[in-house]
Image 1: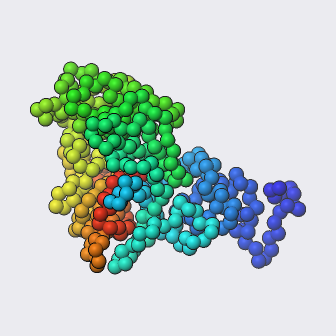
Image 2: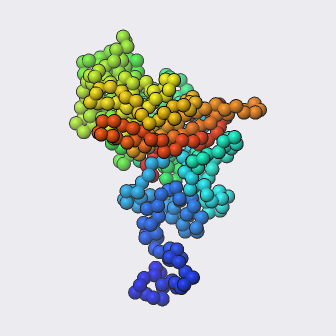
Length: 410
């Protein structure tokens, strides 16, 4: 029976040797969930050591529903690497410093927070205290090709066939990042070849690319809330006849298709879900760079990481109609980089890249670097970047390619 001020017999004894912390175990579950939901997930592994009850509450669906209702959700970074010895991907989550304070062997330690088995580079330690740790492995069998996207706390993937001529799977598999468990969605209406996947307003758009595309029934949309697939109205503009879909892109709540004809000329269109109509996009939109390089959108500003010798981050100035360098990252440009990608991390940008390192023996290694950048607007015209932290977050064999960088909201 919960204690209350009207029932003194149920109240805990608080003497001079007691502290407010002693009262916490006596709180009802709903009140305790309300308190835990206001705490950052960075501290959940530590709190899971308090008791069996805490460990159970921290892994309950009710906790994350409460976090959503309170607006306490956080952006969580997920990285996928591919092992050369297995077709199954290895998923990692960015673990911030506080999560690794307790001993991982403790019996109350939540399994989904346990660290990855591959040792870190002994020649360098993480000065920021941030590392990539493993999460539940995918177990769908061979996965030679796949695409992914995130909706809220779920990471969706679509698995492809062994050749370009085979249709992809008609289902979406998704990992619930709150529990790191995998599930399967209903089958889509028509299997796609060479599909592209994007998210607009919490719905997943899947489009088939083809060199002989007639645009009939090539686009479907999946609503995770209703679990229903629907066909999307196909564009019928005369200007796109004889074109093929090269890439899809989302900007300001609209779904863009980047098209090319047989003469490699660009003819782009945009689908506006709220109006359920298509429009032709003029060449003045300047989306050519977005099709070639890693990009992300933050507060309706388009950023991309340009892979030249300096690896500059750029942003698009709509008023000036040109791409501009994101200043303030001079020290970051000096670091050696190999593979790379960038993603929006709430209102910030996260960069991920690799660096080969010398190692003894037959196994060559590489370090995975990560940097978190906060954006500042000056005088309403200039955007500056500030590096919050930059460090090596994982060391793996060189043969492990970087596949995906995604952000879930938990």
